[in-house]
Image (cartoon, rainbow, N blue to C red):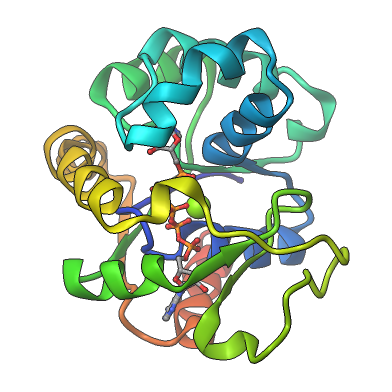
Length: 209
Ligand code: AP5
Ligand code: MG
């Protein structure tokens, strides 16, 4: 199954996509993780993307479309995948239609206030992509999956979070109507706890399989 996870920053796309991908044994394609890795490794894409990502703006569509074209052409995508963070604009969604057949769009709906709380306490592992929140980490400072030291993302400061939310509402939220119009949209209450959101998503995906 080819799945898109759509939702504002902090909605839980990465948290849920990682669990669903493990369960379905398909790759999680997080464009945010790909860009952060490229920035860390100072690749040509990373150098172009850095200022956009760190200010909370969107990286230009043509860069993202190239990244996704290359990634979807890899062998591990043949049995399905989750796109986590792509598409984020209508032109990206239109470009995707030319290279992939999407089966379902999972939208996670969460209030802005909760998003700000979640992002301000988030800690991430840049090596394996695992995501945590300080409220459940205790005094742990390393990733329980791979042992890497956890960090706070540079774009999780209050000013950049506000910018990311504005960008989501103006540039990405129009995709909700775009995919609703195509009969692909399934909306989930992302305000529930992580296990409850996961159970709802898996229930829907199993019914579609
Ligand atoms: P990206 O990395 O995709 O960031 P984002 O969309 O802003 O989303 P986040 O990763 O911040 O949130 P999430 O929904 O994954 O939430 P998470 O599971 O971590 O993109 C970063 C940047 O890259 C963009 O700003 C842009 O510059 C660039 N970019 C990426 N893709 C692009 C594209 N297609 N086009 C152009 N530019 C692009 O959860 C958040 C926190 O909440 C965690 O602490 C978690 O533990 C907690 N949490 C999760 N679920 C729950 C729950 N149910 N209850 C309570 N807490 C929860
Ligand atoms: Mg994410």
